[in-house]
Amino acid sequence: MNQKLDGIRPRFSHWVTALAPSVFSSVMATGIIGLGLVLSGFIALGQVFSLLAFVMFLGLLGVLTLRAVRHPAAMLLDILNPAVGFGFFTVVAAANVLALVLAVLNMPGAALTAMIFGALLWVVGTYAIPAGLVLHERPEPALTLANGSWFLWVVATQSVAGGLAHHTYLGSWTPMLSLGIWLLGCALYLLTATLVTVRMIRYPNRAETLSPTYWIFMGATAIGVLTGSQLLGLANSDEIPQWLQANIAFTTLALLSIGLWFIPLLIIFGIWRHVMHRHPVSYETGLWAIVFPLGMLSTACLSLGSIPDFTALFVLGQILIWIAVAAWAGTTALWVARMKQPA
Image: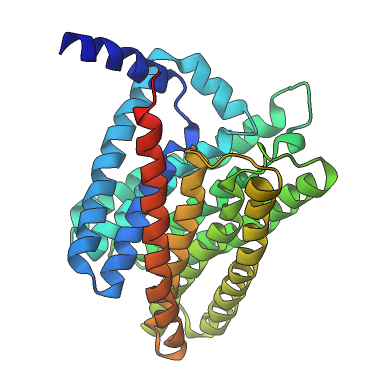
């Protein structure tokens, strides 16, 4: 027993030291699949995923806090690093995805707590991380390190909007604030997509850098669709002015169209990376950036498909949720295989 503990302790210590900022993407993926399964009618299985996401969130939050206490300098370097800094927004998105799941499972108190926690972190991060990106001096332009993780800023913003849309009982101001943050997320998507696309065209792409995080190109639109469907529900119940309904519907469908268009292109990127350039398929935190967008797209289709004018999307969501479950299972299997490897 002591020998096993002696082997576990250094591995755990190394994991804490080198903890990826985007590690909470695993919680995002697990939680949104749980929500999608519940919306599909597989309530018991959805509850299992939701409970697992809750446990993962608490565990990773403890590890992140431990890293902040033991290695504050390393965390600061990560925050200021354009290649990984935006990964800290996964904490925000994970908290708000968890809030949505808890709300659907009829746990309003826990959902409100998670939503407030995520919103407060977003307020800090949405200014601190971009400010560090612009103001911190570095030997090379920040744009050279731009990647798909930058879209996590958009995902976090849309998750805050979605969380507020579920808590309209807080006051009459809540629906319009949710709408405003949703529109901010749409604007940030255009800004981020421009910067990341310029980086991909302007600078060379290599198999080791063209990571699965580029799937967040699609995931950021999918969470916008989910929040848009919530806002349409608020417009139908007159909590948002009726004259805004057509604009919300148009923007939501535009986001859905963009997200669906991206899927074949992202598959081509994967073929280029793993088939043409023979990059090995092994566990990396970025793989959750494939699982989450698939789960979010399915959940968005299920949510939007529950509105009478969009019922055809519900069937698409029912198909996509099982693709997301398969991707989750595959990523988990690769993670377990990595954990069994000797240190």
